[in-house]
Length: 193
Image 1 (tube, rainbow, N blue to C red):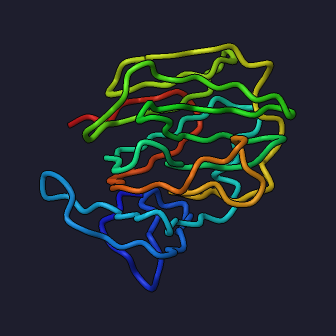
Image 2 (cartoon, rainbow, N blue to C red):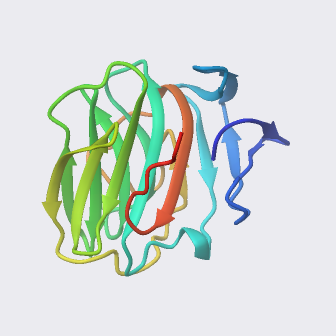
């Protein structure tokens, strides 16, 4: 999702997998460097339906977001809940990646806050680790008991964690700008400029 256009209340999936997201109380605005960004003000989110192409079962998995937060706490994206799932979120402006495998939650947290535009990546590695990267640098990692065992029941939300939350207590909805979200099976591969 690069948030270039909203069409019929949907953000279009540019991957070709047709995982279009339903827009709830969010608008596109001018972002940085002439790019569009999704503007969320604490009451909006994007709902992305379940699909085979978004199934993290038994594989390495990567979630990347480019954003600028206006509030110190908030959910950037979340998929799943308390039995299986993952979430990228902020606490006191520190990027955090939480992974839940068979009800066991592991959280990796950056020690430094981000206060401007940042690229944050949460990865479930093939060797069963959760990592969080900020602007291309791994800033935290922790071992996982395994990989996500089944396709999470909950849909994915960008800007919120609705339904069964991945993180307890659930962080608030995101306030700020999101320029891009990318998800893919495998480890992080930075986009070339």
